[in-house]
Image (cartoon, rainbow, N blue to C red):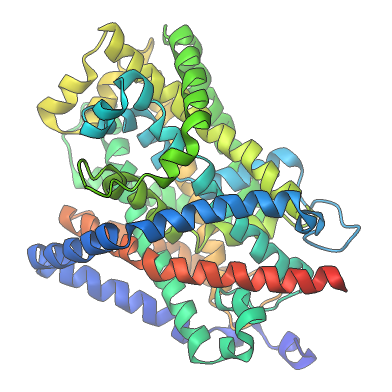
Length: 508
């Protein structure tokens, strides 16, 4: 960047087009969803079905390719590249780095899904085709939240980290990661379209993430305090969450790292309580051990299963859905992971990311999921009957937690941990969005506090508005899944650009 640009105040470097256009697009969609919910849902469901049914193989192929590429990058000559100066030490200690990476990549929905995801698979015809519910309903959550999803994050984190810390890029944008391949085209219309798509997907994805777990948090509060169910409780939860992550965000990386570390302590406290005091310790550990082995044995068959005859449409309903949703989140989380990975090699970033994040993810599903599965198979609680009776996962999870000793204490720990997860996820996302706002910003600069506050509030306002229209939440989630289709092509462009640029770097 020229000295002239480096001396330009941050406020004069704001790219208003990149900020305003995606926001207005999301806002317009929200208005359509509220005014025409049925028509909007019909159109989006049709598009979503076509993409999943016709182009499902593309999503699956991209997922497997990125996973295999992550291993190649880690163990090849690319693995020796340090994301920073050749002799630079890691910027953050291992635990803080791992905490920020894990919490930025997963919001509170990990706790929600950990308790209940096996329930969604248990009666699926595909599970019956494969064998026992015991075996496969405990395996599939590990597959859908395991190596392939994290591969999306880690590979792109390496790409962005190389761009920021090795090449010293002064544009923290999706398009800039394609420069080695597209050249000066990233400064023109193609680059602008990539950036608009990325920020649109970011807004759609983050807005709907709250739809997954905030109803559970609301249910916890109504149970604890015997309150009538109200959308205002959800609004209050969103407000408190916003206060937490805005406070952390305005204190920069120090605040974010402190919040992430606190979140991990709460997370492990919850897992330890359920594991050791829930009365299902042996079952949890043995079922989890078997599930990990089953996943390792069948990983490639699960990753390549397409159900060409559509006998159950399981991959279309689940695997493709998950890969698409993780792709949408790739707009924000990898940028943040790449930023905090300064001083680490490509090998350390990828293998350390797998070791820390995948293991923590597995622990969550193994302990919380197998606890509730253990209640079902032992006959202590008919979890599936409770779900079948009301079709409400939130009430089902409350019933599961109430089987634990001192259940109110667990509910308090759960909601505090969920608020912490949301806060740590969204402060990292708001930081990335804030950096995205500028035409130029160095890796050592932080966005202005006013810009960070703007994004902190914007990321919470849309979920608040949509709380009053349940169908809109589902619609916007479909929008984010649809957005993943073009985002996948951009991901491939970024990877190709990195491989070209890194190869030239190694030759020099």
